[in-house]
Amino acid sequence: MKRRSGINMSDVKISNRAMILNQVKGSPKSRKDIAEKLNLTPAAITMLVNELIEQGCVRESGHVDEPVRVGRKKVFIELNKDYRYVIGVNIEGKHVNIGIGNLQYEVMASISESISGLSPEQVVKMIVRQINRLLHENHIELSQCLGIGVGIVGKVDTKKGISKHAYGIWDVEVPIADMLEKAFDMPVLVENNVRALALAEMELTMHRKISNLVFMKLGPGIGSAVIIDNEIYTGAHSDAGEIGHMMIDLDGRQCQCGLVGCLETVASITCLIEDIKQDFTNEAYPILSKLMNEDIDLLNEGLIIEAYLAGDQKVVDKTDAMLVYLSVGIINSIKFYDPHKLVLYSEMFNEPILYKKLLTEIAKHQIEESLESLIESSNLIAPKCVGGVVLSAKKLFFSKGAMVAE
Image (tube, rainbow, N blue to C red; front, side, top):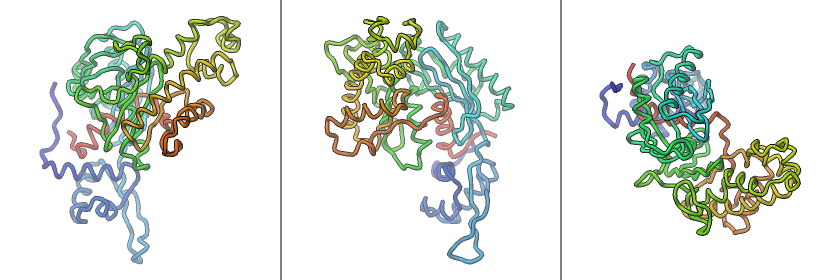
């Protein structure tokens, strides 16, 4: 593929430009404030900021009176969020979510499609078709886009852009980056979907100044990611932070990863659904049965939550048993990684009663620090493709000091 190349600059200058961009992406700041924060001279900051203004990726946003010196006004610099756009893709379960975002990580438009029964080639062709559709509908030229960030379940080779094993989707290696690069002639980044979402969690809540984070996604399985010093930690073989595959029950079920008794086999939504189906009768689950119109094939996470809150006793018992196992996994993760925060991303824990029940289980094991300050439910409300949007914007724009081809 013909790669885009930036202007030849020293690494130091690119690094300084990147630091300036990271300063203004959250909120506008004056040149003076930026210089003080980065410990660079005002002259150096002025030169670099003027370059960025001339390029179009930042702009002056207004004046505020300087309280110390009468008549002196600060000129604030802000990110031009529409200088370029990025494309985000999330592949998990039976669906793909595709969206276009700006440099403020806002998903401007998105679409979700079923990929059930499709081959890898068919999935990629569908992604290409929908990206072109979104660009056309939102009047965005391909040349205005920096690249594509893809989050996908399972194991990935981030350097080669390969999905090595997308659990529940396909069990063969798929060169996603190469396939999409051939279609669009732009950089494509491929990452585990939960790691991409964890990166989004960090970037979209950067005002909290948290640099170490454990991110757990409870869904069909249990996905997780570890961020250390603001960077995703992947480990030597790209398997770091796989909390869902820590072994909990040596006599338990075989996991899709090949091991036996993983946390995912006792504390995921899939295992909860399977447990309910094993002894389901209309009499044993009266509330749930009514919610499903007596059709067990309609069973899903949302209906389980609804039945739990309505007091369907067997649903309550099985869900509570799942939460006990999950609490063990969370405690082990906190003890092992010692993060500033452990964030839970889940439909289930958006429900206060279930979230409080989980915290109660964790508290039984007497973690020293206050649970309210250590554990929280995710604030991400954007479509799941936001992970790919943040991944591509961070790696292709901010980290490169906005050195992109014009």
